[in-house]
Image 1: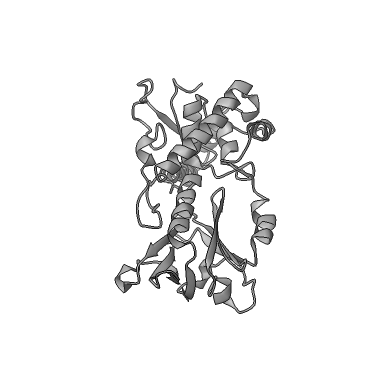
Image 2: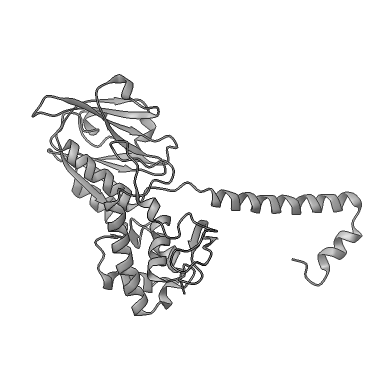
Length: 326
């Protein structure tokens, strides 16, 4: 911006070399903003509550009671914490245990064996837990950890693989659920599927941020990310930039209801696969075909026919309908 002609007069009075330097700096700033906006538009979607819940459900369905016979560590730096049990790293990684508990809180996942040892997972951007056969040809690339499992009822073996090409996720070892919950899961917000309305209203009513930004804060509500925040706000008819604490009670009721409905719809559909999400069987989610606004900037809103818009809000691409959302 040029104010009172001060910048232009200084540039004119400077030597040609100074003028070139000034223009170079201004062009550099412009390129930086253009690059930043492009990176925001091309952001890598992260698995959210519905995707992690599908991982939990399928692991529980396929691996409950299976015994961990061996752990192969191909990349130790994906393990984000120190060993917490006697017997070294393999025991900390559940070796010798029988898979007993399959837990989730928000976007966090935990596997528990019968003696209480726990592994906590964060899928990050590209983390996957895949269940494959013992066929060596079925091991994918970036297989950072491989658990060899046995079904004690049939004697049949299988493998559980942790792969994370971008390595923004990871896992943590814990001596038990109690200490993990106290130190990690109780620190973040209530799970989005378990939050009662009055608690939801109180939390978003005490923040001075936009409602979209508040929904993404895992310390307020655990499990909601960019995809389902956009979808819930559209379902509730609320613009993402509106201040959270200024929403009327009727609006917060609609939003709380929309969140629950959309999250359950997405779980039923297997989650959303935008780029890399796969369930433990290697399958993709199906809810992306039901998205009303997320990833549909420039397309027609199926509700009213107007053009869906997008913007960068606190560094996150945000999509909304200018007619359906007020």
